[in-house]
Image 1 (cartoon, one colour):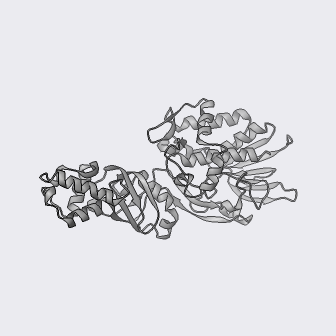
Image 2 (image 1 turned 90 degrees about the horizontal axis):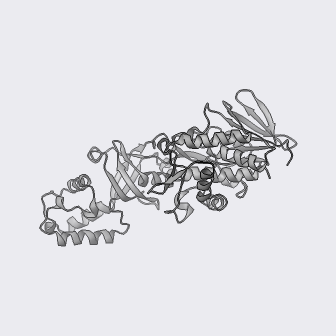
Image 3 (image 1 turned 45 degrees about the vertical axis):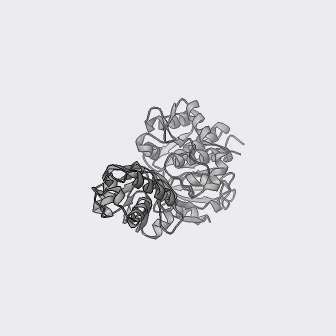
Length: 409
């Protein structure tokens, strides 16, 4: 590579910074500029993990990439071999950021402050000589006859570059994707992912604040299901069991206009026959005890009282007085409690988009465009997204790292 290699990184987020830093380390003579449309760099990193920055995951509970990445799991399986969660952990600690892994396998900076990650990336980029410019919104990309790429920005600034990496993040309303469509890239229609469910059921919402862990949630009639903790909120349900389900079923939920049925298995036991055995055992052992005094599966008392009321079973009724139909109805409600979703909420200030530039339009090894040479993509601008837990940022680090390598080769 010559010292005149000019590289533009469009988007000052996690993937953009990682791509710029890795490219500059591999080719110190390259002239690299990050262009960000907003007034602040790494704005989404600042709010992830509730402002604490859940920057990756231990992957201890993940046996298949598809569990974490509903879209793009084949690509992520490949990229994680080149820059894994372990590599990310070591990378940040090498740069002086001490990390901690929580009991739920989420990884955070020990400072519990996203600014630690932001400062690490911006300082390192500055030290390496990467220019970082805010207020530059990309309007168009075109290819010159010499295969350099011509960029036009909303401010009127125009320039040519030898290589360009697009790391603009998700586009919930499709903003900016027309630029890539014009060049010939296939676009997967963007829809929201990672959200909570609204449920208009006054009786159920009296359980606000109740946490049940674990539960299994599912969309009846589909293969979409998720496991984890569930939180009843003043608008419906949230927690990992809901957020994971929203991610896996993002397109289906969009198609139904977020009005569908959701089933909750409060027991966390996937086979109803096992749940039935436990309820029958409780009935046999506690025949003289009142229903309210013995809670199956250690359910929270408020939830258990709600379920009894829902089934019309008096709390004072004795376990031994339950008939076969009572037991059958009880097991069905415990393992397949159906609610109507009446819309979606947002998960804190974090939002993830399903869709973007189709993976069929990029080289799976380099993330270079198949239709426009020297143009690369990384991060959520591609049709790759993950469940909650640090997996989205890990995708950004992995993709950014690979683009940083590929863009200077």
